[in-house]
Length: 411
Image (cartoon, helix red, strand yellow):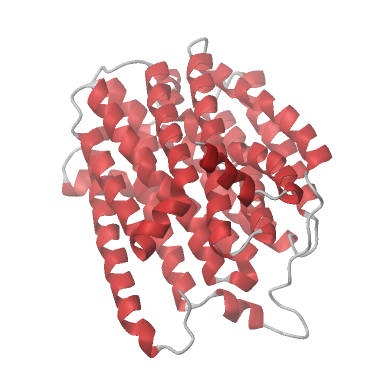
């Protein structure tokens, strides 16, 4: 334990440690809305005439609105300091979170408006946390620090998931009171987050469109498409877990929040150990993560007890941790000179996958499995991740074979 603590201290130099305090704080809220999956069934009861797929869109709308916001964040990073972008995002997030509390959601469209504001805020914030880390660390240390940041993110998200679940027991709209925690994060950001540097522009008079060429390489394009599909299949867990617990009579929203929290805690452990895991697995790390995700979703789909569902959730959390850290790490390494925009694009593609996940998963499960159950949705996700694991293994094998013939190619 003593050597482990010394290792953490070595990664976080004094001048950088203070930066991670606000970064980890608002990083929690750039993904906290996924914890509201435990409330979906209650929202469905509130609006019984609204189709299930529309109820699920309440959870996916933030991902849709995050897309232009992330691109805007990447663009603004060349003109506006990162701290200013973060403060504006936190203010929007607070307003979006308070709408259901103040208006008690008399219409499903009020929830859509809330989700839209939350999505815009998340889109502005999401690239910033990782971009600030990329300014201070490089190489293998970057992967380790990104892992620690993600670990802190999961701890916060686990707490948020529990709070959301128990607040919902007093009324589903009360779950949104969790966004009161934005206030201290806003204050921490004002006083502790440095202004940040300005990024190089993608297009300018001197280099013209050279920045775009450096960004959209074949390797980066492959990663963007891969992570988009991974997000699509991953969201099958979040959008179906509450529905499946209700269908099988396994528990309440608080019980669903326990699964979500355990999911985050497992991913937290993965975040801490990501550097060591990637050192052992090397270029097979992501394929391994996809395989674990497939197994977790498969077990969850066929679960006949809450304990079995928890096991599936643990495996899903482990695989999610690998996938999410790898998204930032792989993209920042492949587009070193344009890391911030590469991260923004990666997150955009991830959110495209999440946004269309309910529609795609619903279509696949009704077409291929002739079922409309939540368990069938998770089974589709499991099959999807098994396919992605195979694709990633084949791609990495191809890269290893072709590497000696490519002069100067890095790892």
